[in-house]
Image (cartoon, rainbow, N blue to C red; front, top):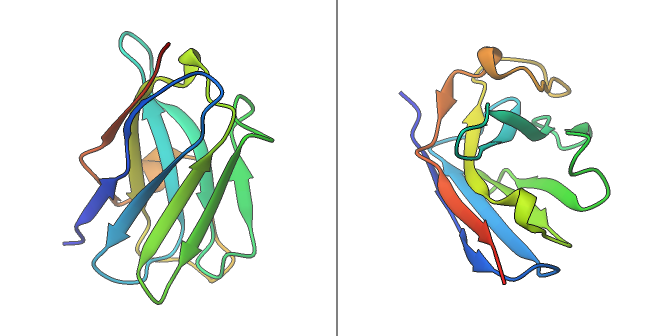
Length: 124
């Protein structure tokens, strides 16, 4: 069992920045962020390989969001800039236990563990 705990969500205004974090019980393979807004399907946001060399982003966040990780702290971060109301959602951290140092994926079904989520609301 791997526990994931997200933090850093909150209420911000359009154009603001916010960083959310996810702490895991140990260093894992691919780590990802997904989000789900009310009435909408879960959406891939970003993923990063264990060594941090490979990243991937959903089309709607490219150029605005940055994923990173600190394996000494078993933590993955999602820096979100230029936020707008369509970014409002519950943000979930996901972890894949096995995989090479370069492995990362945008496919939700491949992830083994999920955090409970953190709410991000963008509103004026």
